[in-house]
Image (cartoon, rainbow, N blue to C red; front, side, top):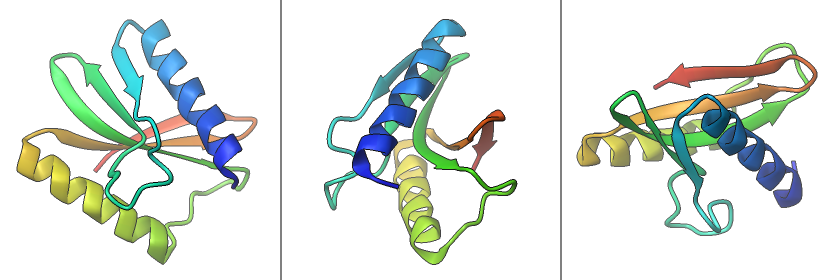
Length: 101
């Protein structure tokens, strides 16, 4: 998936969370830096989440090695920061699934 498409789904996720009454912000440059650990930061129901946004046209989300390493890094930072980690998956043509990590 290209950076342009990633940004599209990240913005869609942010707008969805705002529409549901939560505060959510996209992290600028999240896909291009080695030090970036998440795509968005979500404030929901008194909790803070580091969020990684992924999209797939498959019926299942396949956790490839690179994605697992990326999520492990995000979870490590979230744990040290005493916040939660969340994977937001956009299943194209079917909607969103949120998985707390």
